[in-house]
Amino acid sequence: MEIVVVGRHTEVADRFRRHVEDKLAKVELLSPSAMRVDVEVTHENNPRLADRSERVELTVRAKGPVIRAEASADDRFGALDLAIDKLNERLRRARDRRKDHRNHTVTPPVDVRPYEEVADEAPAAAEVSAPAALARPGDSVETHLGDSPVVIRQKLHHAEPMTIDDAVYEMEMVGHDFYLFIDKETSRPSVLYRRSKGWSFGVIALDNPCTGQPVSNLT
Image (cartoon, rainbow, N blue to C red; front, top):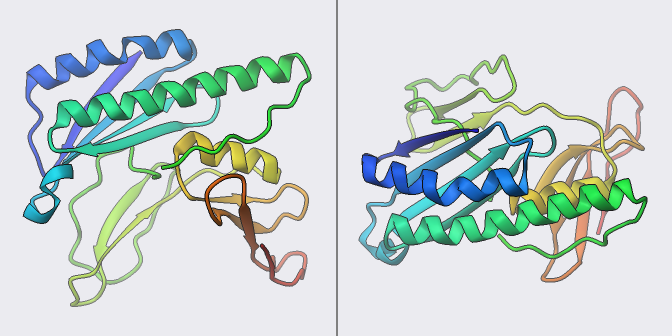
């Protein structure tokens, strides 16, 4: 299993890289099909965020859903420990779900709090205002919005049509409060979001020009 460690706005010491490899050794036990783990370390320079100035994001790529976890702390070793605890829990849920599917049983959605994204190190923000061309799933780019300081980060994802139940599961695996997907039953681009703590979710669906179906907001 390959482990790739990158830093955003920070340097990553060899000592920390070795520590990451030791701590991620259990991933292969929970996910034997894991091919790669992306580790992104981000440093926040804002002194008001000193207690969470170090953020670690973990992304496991295997033959199945991408599983992510992230955590922040005042040092990156502590943030790594917190992120790994979340990741291991999600890997266990994914493993149990696979077992349940083989046994033809259904596991109810489990509430998991916490973010998506960023597995690959993003290119530096480009001084352009036009939308970036993203050719392949996984491509990402940052652009400035005109002359303003606003930075827009874009990333292209591959999408397989899925049911709402599958979308809930996928959202739990990445630890987000929302999930963009294509509804298998309606073919509509849809967003699943968490309305409150627990099992309360909403779905916003967009009109699909191919079907002429109206926009719906299921809450």
